[in-house]
Image 1 (cartoon, protein in one colour):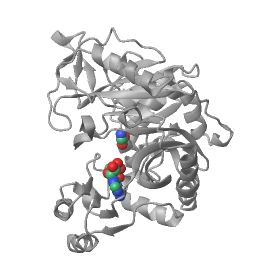
Image 2: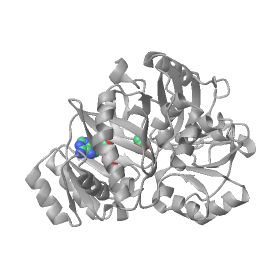
Image 3: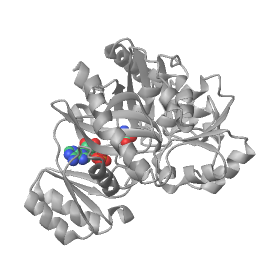
Image 4: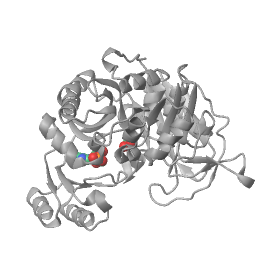
Length: 425
Ligand code: AMP
Ligand code: GLY
């Protein structure tokens, strides 16, 4: 099988690493990729937001199967364009990707499906939104409807912050994403992520994880895309997973079928769990980053068979082979992230790192130097590396991951030292 993966972050490096290990993978191209991916697969410069260009590329490179990593091309309809051109694609249609691209749409689906989630109201104007917040009081959660690169949610602990968030959203700070605003009840509990493959009809759980959103140790500092993750998440016990499947995932998929927009792809189910009862925080239409890194470490080569089965509607006859193991990933980011940071700094020590089925340093924002920087690995992004490891216990996985971190020589980078604290302290 000739495979194309769209994306160039740590998520896509982990996907590429796992897919490559499957003997069914004959050739792998990743667009645009990064310096780490370039060491294991061919990387191609390609505008992944343009379905026509991607379809032409698939034609020229005899691609049999496309795996879409990030949400932006899915929300743009790139999977639809590729399917229309006759290619097999893992990833939802534009209509189904609305489960991530529109928070108001997701709320509507939850209502129709009877799925437990926060109480809410929707607004297209500031005055009634302000009045609603004043009536409800704080804490309260203000969300821009559309995709806002993870910045469209304000958890307001006081009224002043909530009102300011409403004004910011309606003044166009979030562009078209803020044209509609969803205001939600503040939910308490423990957050965790549940990943389910869907083939339109059937849903197959492929793992649980917990992320660390804040930039600094002790969950201090600003929110980020995620500074580390581990799998499994103990709070998502078998019983809670079962409740999530019965009350949230299956009714959602049935509602999507009913509307003529079945969901095919991975559904990232963001949950709040309190007293063993799961409620939906959000859906994403893609793997989490860095959650994907720990899932791929645990699933390995079988992921290609699973994605293939989801694409062909064969999940009902498919099983996941689980090892009783744990995985943990530590994100190394450029100092200053998620604010401003230097680009082009050199990272040393990467070539000496172990690369085994137990430990891999996945790359996110890296590039290979050119000209007088040739032979060097340079940091180009905010989140740059993911030291990822597996072990019989979470402690073993954590020790292995931090041993990699400590072997990396990158003075301009930083990481949290407490990934996994909920379980390990
Ligand atoms: P979202 O993009 O919807 O996942 O929101 C980002 C983060 O905001 C979530 O991961 C939660 O930590 C928090 N959040 C979102 N909605 C709520 C809610 N209704 N109650 C409490 N926290 C929330
Ligand atoms: N790590 C959270 C996300 O991928 O949305």
